[in-house]
Length: 122
Image (cartoon, rainbow, N blue to C red; front, top):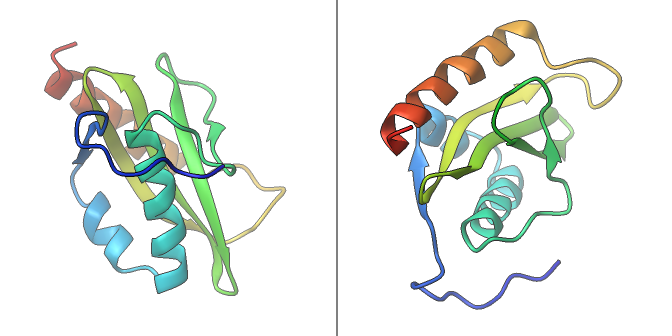
C-alpha cells in the first residue's frame, strides 16, 4: 500500500513510550526504515502490509514486523486511543515464525498500554 503525501492536518501525533524510540534507532537501517514507514502509515490512518493485531488486549494493539538476517523485529503500537499513535514497544524476536511472542515482551506491552491509556486520558 502506498502512503499518501505528507499532510500535516491528517498526520496523527506519534508518542514514543519509555525506550521505544531508542530501541528503534538502535536497529539495522533497513529495519528502521521499514518499521518507521509502517508507523508513518498508522499516523495517516493506513495499515502497513505487515501489520497484524496482537491478540489478548482490550484495545486494538497492532504489531508490524521487519525481517533481517539477525532475526525478526517488531514495533507494537495502538492507534485507536485518543488522538495519537502510541508506540508501546520495539523489540527483536529471534525466531521468524512458529514461536509465540515471549511472555516478558507481552507483559511489558501491557504495562505500556496502561501508560498510554493514562496519557490519552482514558
